[in-house]
Length: 288
Picture 1 (cartoon, rainbow, N blue to C red):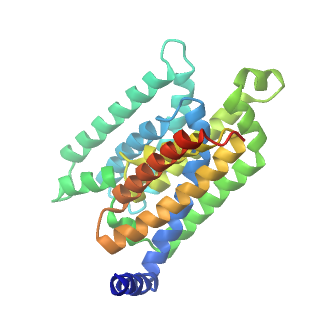
Picture 2: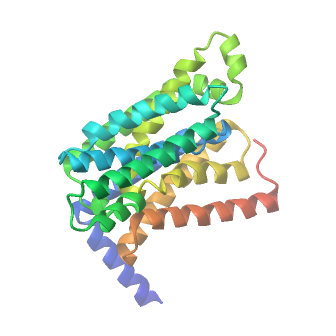
Picture 3: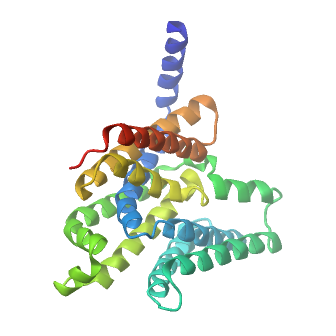
């Protein structure tokens, strides 16, 4: 057993000495951190699956970028996803089309059109492999360039700064939007800001876990934290810590075991939720 542990440590040290592994860990941790911060707000506002809807939109945008042979997919994927986030927000406030129906409508439509475009204008000999990697995550997280890492760092830092600066306003909009509006808070503007931020996070997370698994990064850490804590601040802090630990562990396990990165991270998130759930049942949760 001791010899086996030494082997694992040696193998881990060997991988950590390689730049692409360090890049993957940095990007993965930042994406998980940003996802968890906004995840608490989205879960409490019962808008959890906006991440799922936007990820499918991003899949459709990636299909268009692939057909156009764009070297930088971000140029088309990010604007389309942000516009869709704004559209979801506006449509979800429509009395005739509720938020969940709007998400389902845009999500399914974008996924269908994306796959249709990839089939009709296929530029790859391995279409099924390309679709699978986009939906469930790909190995591109392990082939990041320095430029892509710095882009992710820049966008992640921007998200964190915005969250910290507008923490009180986000808190107000999350728990009582009508009261916040009555006190002079521009709730529509802050809802729009939240939608744009989650769109940015979705685009960043596509290579990490794929479009079908992104919602897990948003939902599971928040739900796990809610099993143990009740205050918004403590739920947010614990959710962020848990999400970072799960992402870091998932990437390392996937590298060592040769398993898919996205699926491994989500599996660890699920296990973490189960542990928090049972701890919450036993202790009754921490009421602070």
